[in-house]
Length: 215
Picture (cartoon, rainbow, N blue to C red):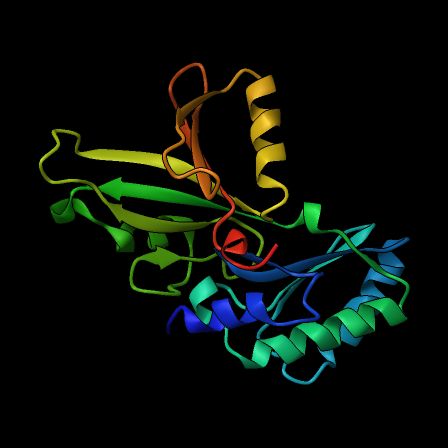
């Protein structure tokens, strides 16, 4: 696993429908009904190389995730994405990048207290990498373990990561601020902002890795 896969995906032409999130490449297609979503899902499932993708349909859209993690993206996924987009157009579906997002929970602890096995067990999640867990149904948020600075007295912490398309990050930021949130740390902007609610609970809005590529 490396960064080359997702970097090449972002740099490739013909991938405008797709957003590269923490959970890999994702596209959301609007359709007219659940029946149309099911028909599109069936067609996408027949695309060469689409095995391993996660398809989720509702009454008005189909979302397609090509991999469960950003570091699982491979060069072959570029052609798969193009093929899926072509199939979607044939079915009259419209891609909507504003619908694409990945929500994950960062469970932080000092190195001697990292307990990834507990979180997998209590959530009923599968291991994707050594430091995380994913919903085997592909519905729920992922979680990942984050080391805390051992020199700090804090023993544990948790925050939410929201990964969105590069052009959606500042819109999501504005909405959160209008709803009463505050910026806790903008040192990584415009790649990411750490926000807090009135009680001090933290959430990170991230345009990475989608914002790492060409606009």
